[in-house]
Length: 254
Image (cartoon, rainbow, N blue to C red; front, side):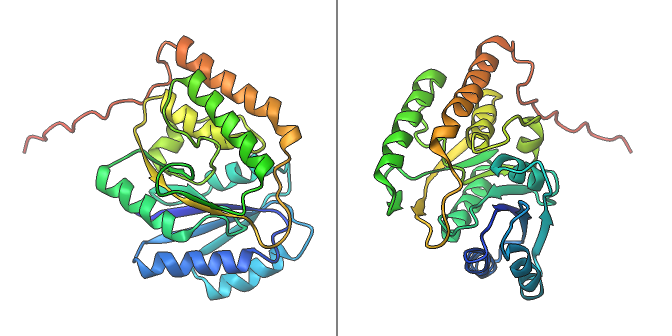
């Protein structure tokens, strides 16, 4: 399977080069056919210049500039409209995600023929480095609420770092979230619509440069809206959006 990696980037001039080099080197080491799709979300710094330079060094790099509307969700959606692989992962530009974990996702999907592979930073084998205490507290409360309301055991729905087959992405459209609430819209829709998934422990490391784009105070109501949307679909859609079973191919008479 060809792997596409969608990376939203806003003002990541300092982080984007080490992120892309490490990602490309790791995927190449394991002979994973891939493309790296970066959405420059109308950055105001030198992100675009760095991408220009890296495109010469990394042949698998393609990049776009999203002139607007802007925001994390819009940037990811921009990439999801343009990737060419058989499966697609969402990866952070600030090197908080580990490329080695992405390789684990990829081979897990292939081995088990899963529709999705979700990471968990909080299960056995997962790890966080320099995770802000307030953010961690809010994260665990939010994920507990999601687990209880949706009736699922997965404990890290807000983790953006996930892998989806192309067919899964097509099956969970249309996307509604313009911001970080897209991180829960994608997996919850996949779960509600009957796509199977595996959970793989992953690590998370706080960024070294720049500042986080997630504004917790602004996101509460947006996460709640998407959660309610998925809850309503689960109990009231009558299965209209469920994954369609693949029909076996009919033998051809010769």
